[in-house]
Image 1 (tube, helix red, strand yellow):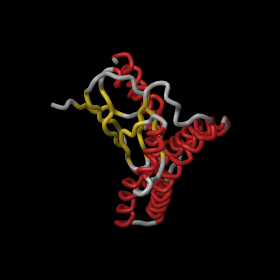
Image 2 (tube, rainbow, N blue to C red):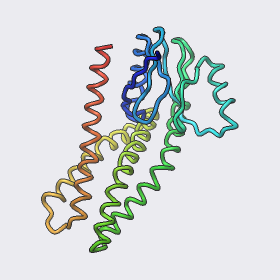
Image 3 (cartoon, rainbow, N blue to C red):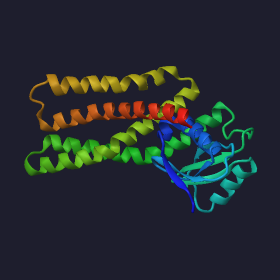
Image 4 (cartoon, one colour):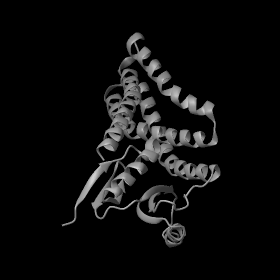
Length: 240
């Protein structure tokens, strides 16, 4: 009987290197990746082997797939699985890295950013418009728009954070320290503004109160997830 198990991902935009290191540790124990999805990896039990893992972000047409995967195979990287424009590869230690310099690493994040932006921008724009509509409307329409805006925000906010994280990764590689620092500061500025509006500004109305509460959650929740996943990686690393 085939043995499988599922492990969580820290989110490739947020902890790609940690994920790849974790997959290597599992392979040493005989647990190898067979598939991956948005929030985790499916592992299959086999013989222990030392594999290194890496991901590439590339939008492929069906006609280009064979040539694309053959290119990696000729360099020693075996294709494991793909999810949308994200492709997971593995190789033996000592294989030439997929990204060998700053320019190719920047290109990697450019590809990742392009695929995410096409999804993030429409969601964010629609969400903003619906929230604006909720603020200027009244009655049943207002209530309906608030519900729709809240649902859209559940998708738009994590997507926006992911795009920001990808930009942050790209700027780190490029050595743009000012922008990297700005990305770290912005969430806390937004959190402070939201708290001030929610608790100290009178007469803002239910729509603004809900929106500011969601802004607080949008900062607090990813921060909590980051803390939890950091602990998960540390504890998991010790157990493995």
